[in-house]
Image 1 (cartoon, rainbow, N blue to C red):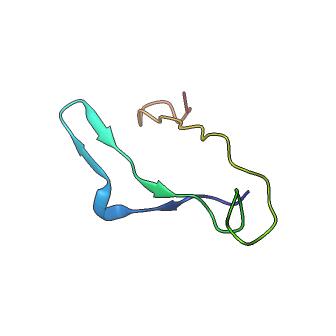
Image 2 (tube, one colour; image 1 turned 60 degrees about the vertical axis):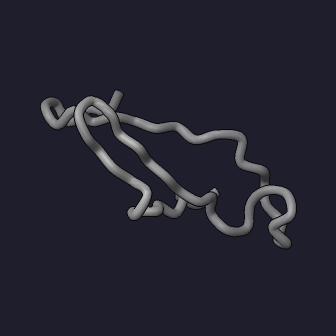
Length: 55
């Protein structure tokens, strides 16, 4: 599937917390009117900005 569509108005970061909001890409899942595999989950990766590696 394609990348999810971020919803910037619902994303925030404060203290030790991050909130990320998105919509699934079009054309995937049940009831979307198009063929495509259902999305079962997302993988979120963190970059601490020090080593350039995601974890």
